[in-house]
Image 1: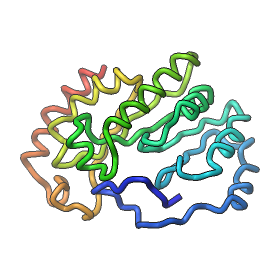
Image 2: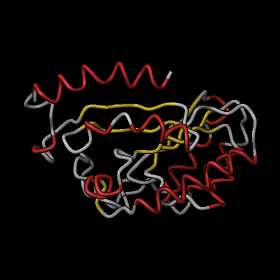
Image 3: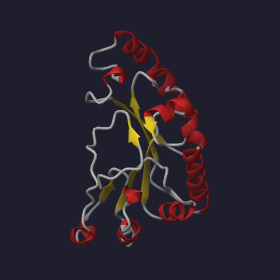
Length: 203
């Protein structure tokens, strides 16, 4: 789907209300028995009214890994249980562990909602404890957040994530935040110094 419930400052997604028609999705389900993995993404997949039906259909195939890309703001207790019981990886885009910075980057989001939902999911994982795919945090590195990346290690541990992806910002949607184009030598030197320290802390 192209639909989303927030409007991130760096998002390259064109404003679109297009969602894959359910009839077309039914054709996709025919491939489920033959797939190793499938990634659900948008926009925001939890806005799609047939997504739970689709997710549960894929869950009938225990060897099929489902990866769900989300901003985490629409995860309910029921959804947390459904995902925690499946062969599924949650990939949550967060960008900052600081409320003010998070809400500046992820326009329309509330940090308190994110924390509540991550707590719901952590508890669901605990209830359905078994070997599960590692859940991951995605972070787009930019001027607003690059000095706070180290905090993600403790944040990931607190909420049960096993990996963090730091990604560079692309495009010119918010040029004042792009430290890579044009290159901000001061910011890059900061990252060169601190990323190894963050990596060591994570290990």
